[in-house]
Image (cartoon, rainbow, N blue to C red; front, side, top):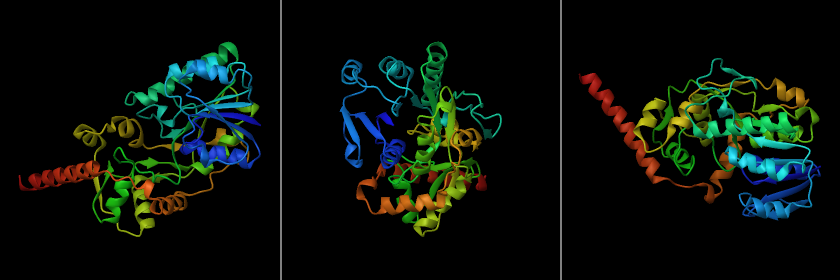
Length: 339
């Protein structure tokens, strides 16, 4: 298989790239080369900025691929650009959408590919929907061979997946746990969520590559394991060997307090209970199952993060914000009791 990945060294795409290379595929990477040294094997680099359409068109003029997957398409103009660049050049074009595109609030907590797409709370999700609409139209009108993939919360070894964090990722929350400080959990921690390790995601994704039955289809890829946010945070604390001190605050209050925009990330995503039905994926990729439970995967992530200083990005601004929000909550409780 000859595959071209645009942005092939991210959380999801690195695991897929590694699996493809281990399986003997010929992999081409089109990016600016900042992290290509993470991959070894039959890798060919096209050093270019995908946003420079003329440059990319020139560099791929004489190339054709079995699969093209673009991991950094976030708006319809980028989808339109890819259509112009790759029509007639690939047997399959895979667009990475998002499970956050599913309707919010949900009419049924069980999510299938037939669940309507509508998210009034998050522009990111609406942009993904617009991309899906454009590419589906091109499939219907011109036969452009699309496959749409919808990931949910996928994580790798470099960052512990949590619900509330600042601009530098989840490390500051991990540090608060280790320091015995209280940690904010949105809502009451009982809503349902799904975490998927990128190694499991890669097995499903590569099973869709070159799969004639996946052409024209939208497919969600997640683990079948469902967890509450309480279970997620307690699992992380348990893996760290510390006691969790949770503080429960509503998603709307967290967003209204600012400066962090939690409207999309919480109200439009993580605050909703989700249970994914992966029956369609398993029909298309017989034998697939997500093998790594969250308690197993997060231990691997913590082992990596705790042994790699570059993953420990402190965020004093977020830390101070957490202290302030928790203090406001305690003050409100005290005032209510004394009223």
